[in-house]
Image (cartoon, rainbow, N blue to C red; front, top):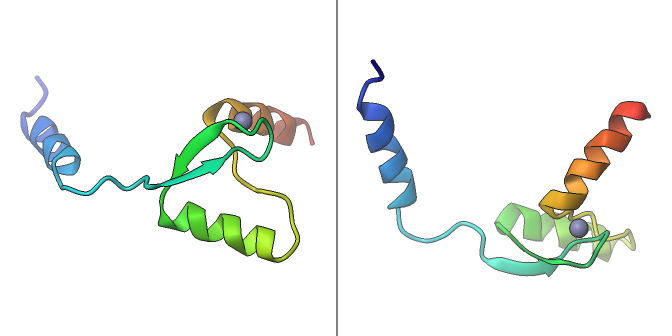
Length: 72
Ligand SMILES: [Zn+2]
């Protein structure tokens, strides 16, 4: 039987106030809207400020990217 405290800790995480994903950006591959947290937002600007491509991937594209990475 599963202990109840797992449910309770999940509730705490969900109820801890401010949502983490706050920045609306675009996926670098399909340009779909996605929301990133502060770290993702910083990573995006680090890359684009350096003249690199948008490194962000939506769930869909990151799945495909993982598949490619395995073959590489
Ligand atoms: Zn995408």
